[in-house]
Length: 270
Image (cartoon, rainbow, N blue to C red):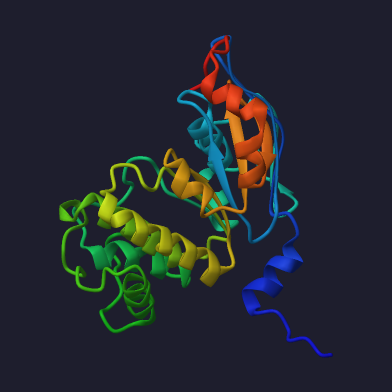
């Protein structure tokens, strides 16, 4: 019996293996331990949730992976390349993309211009705000397609700073779609989003992951939403990962239950 060949994204992720590895990662600031011995091996094309109590170190971990903070121990490996000391732009060129808890959009630029800027860089053009492409070129066509994909095709000329919080989150996803990011970090994408926008945003995230075949890590406090979306869950507690497994096994894990429901002691991480 013959079998069909995998789709292009599936074939590509199959070749990549484990695109992101965190090895013995540690961070100390002023004598306080923020991250300690963090180990994480993320399979290509997977969708991984990162959860933990407030102060467990989730955003700090994302800051280290994305290059905003430098670890004091361990390594960050992207596609078998050690990027521990690489700059933020170098990581972006290597295929790492990220959203933040608070919006990182250009509020005084239009919805279209925000995505078009990312598209023109992705297509090899300038990243300067002074060199926008024409409304009819390849970057604009790419931007329009990505905005349609997230349901913002009707907001092209609105200023990014004027649209709703839920639409800002959709716009950030459209920006990521317009880049060549193969590994995407989403930091609390549902934060501040109205209940009526959550389902649509979840579908946007699913569509992005499927369409790009990318590997996606997501910090999210909406546990019910996250558990129905991800393949695996990494649980952080006091700056380290105490469990990494499927959503069902994580929910049944007594150590995880104790971390969330118990009282623990020690110095909390940021």
